[in-house]
Length: 102
Image (cartoon, rainbow, N blue to C red; front, side, top):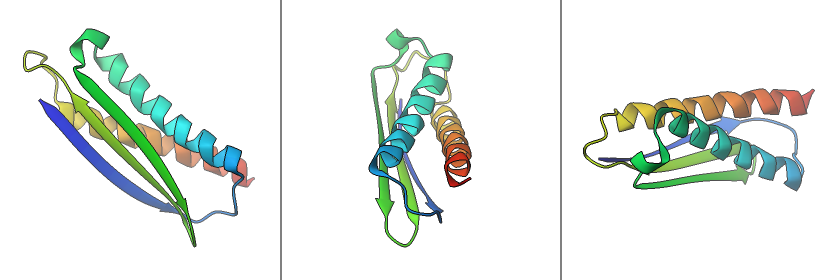
């Protein structure tokens, strides 16, 4: 079983430094990996790829792409797990961006 999911959110914020942009992407990746490996053992994951892209134009766009593949015998709702992990990442990023903007 495998799932690939991509979602984009638009965030209107003041200009961020390159370091802040990198930190936001890493935060999103870290939260997703943590959530997935809280649910699954490492040997239950055949393949995983988490990509966070940030585009800065009129708005700040965060695109998170997650590919997760588990063996057929692993009894987990991969779609739901990936969606939940992405949602937690967006919540963490939103919280971090609020802290930065203060």
